Length: 583
Figure 1 (tube, rainbow, N blue to C red):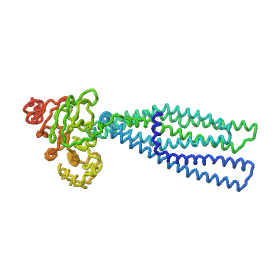
Figure 2 (figure 1 turned 90 degrees about the vertical axis):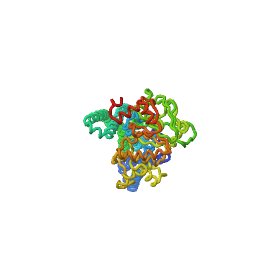
Figure 3 (figure 1 turned 45 degrees about the vertical axis):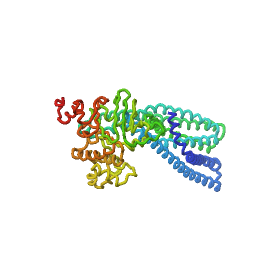
């Protein structure tokens, strides 16, 4: 916790100058606040008790009191304005840094981490950190300075009584530390269950159609209620702790302090006259002493939430499973698009090999296809070629250069990828095709759409290319979404084209148009197609048949049929629809 607190505070370093100015405003406001009871004490002891009503002197005290109050209001406003402005900037820095780091993480991290958990850390947990800087830290700094001012004023009034009041500090500190120690466990559980709630909610919303089709509403509601119940129980335990420590405990100490002060003044009154002004000022300072104490105690819950949340955010920021980066300082360029896999072995979990000693070569401009049953490793070929993951053994070469030596920009800029599940971003159709690359002109966007025959449906949209796309392109059919992603790929003009079941979600009529476009797209480009439907890859130069992570057959369509092996059986099964006939 201490390490996380120090790390949180380190984000204040870039704003030292503004923080110093805010602190000066705070000290000035505190000094003005502390001077108020002194002026009242002077009025009571020098004018009211001796009945000396010098109008000029009283008027000076009144004006001084009024001016001090105005100064305090102005300085407090400036202090809060500067400090909270800094706080919001710090939180903005943290959020951007977290988001930036998440984008650099490897796909393997997202494979094993629920999306809702990540979202909860980037949103809910950073919101708790925001409360720390905006509310908690400013309150603690202000009230600590305020307490120092009160204790200073007490010593100026009566040293002996002030020393007695110092006894209160360790008592209050013990209450705070006890609360922190006990509540940290509950807050960690609350945040964990909140992440589970977000994960469950995210899963339910994304799979709503399946939930409704299979009538899973009751089951998922029951599971959601269970997680929500655990969140409630953790919050309830912490609520009991809050109810005991945050006000009742400090109020008890407050009452004890007032009784102590009055008793001491009463004892002194037996031997010497009591200065009523001093008594008033001391009781006033005691009341003011516990105002910041109570305020800080009430903020302790937010403080604990912020520390627990910061621990979770920093854990995400310290995640070292980063996306693969370039090895070496060279800047090789992809010029031809030749591809070679040499004895490549890969495992997602480090236990079971998904690819085992895979070797093949694709010459520039060739079209090759990978086919095989589900789980045979076809899509993993694509993942490794895009360098979403690093291989454990072997090497991948493009134009004779090891893939790890290329800059990420070179890989992403020259390898075009079209997935089975077309993903569209919020924005216009034009922006989704251009992908916010301003170097691609409107004319090139429209030309790319025409190339894949997407222009006909785009022209029928209300705003054409400027039509807003709803989340994930839900208002479009699956075929229309896929056409837009095809146009996106063409607009980028890659040297290598990777198609992962790219026509799986397109109707037969659209598929025929797409196949014509794909034939044009492949001209002059190296193309790797991953397919289940063999009818879509019969014209490929080479077809690799995969089984359990190995290439078991290779050749063109006619050669593989002549072998009467696994490809032959798959072809008969798809075209005749009978496994018995395939045998």
